[in-house]
Length: 255
Image (cartoon, one colour):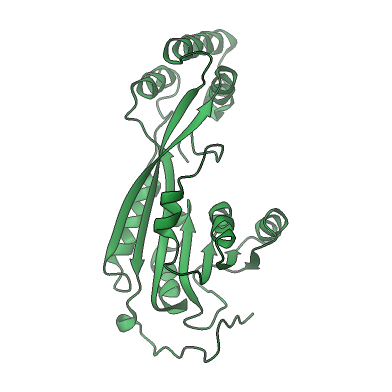
């Protein structure tokens, strides 16, 4: 992920969750450990949420942190659920980590008619002037600092899938407070910057401190700007290679 990646210390925009959530509380499959925190918010809204990850330790950790979620170890391209088990499949911060084509086939299979795929990425917003100045300072020592966004290209695969022909997109703003010490720690802990020689590191941190002091309005902290980008697409079962046979009674999970 790019430097200054999202940390959930700000107030997640309720409007984004409203837009991503099923129209009515229902059955949600959250895919990947990056989906866990938002999946927990969906569960708090009355949805029945199942979280999957192919890593057993990640599944155990998610269940300990969010006991209200049903956590199951499963690969996204081989989901252990009967067809039409869910009203929504949700992927947070992890679409680029999936075998996209195979995963989209599986998402379509486990979605009920009228169900939707929802995808979330939260990324830094570089439109704010002081953020651009910070990037310029860091790139003197690390040309790759505060770059990224390649993960978002994975979302284009949704529109290319015959199972999700119409994709909607919305973006919401998120501001995350950061103190002067917090910014210096963030800069000094970045992998490449952490290995700088002492003289270069001292100069960089001094410049970052000056930038903070000139940009912040004491005693208020600076606000890191993020864009909460959301996509949703209703499933189309007409292109599935095998006939769907929905379960007769509610949600069925086959392990």
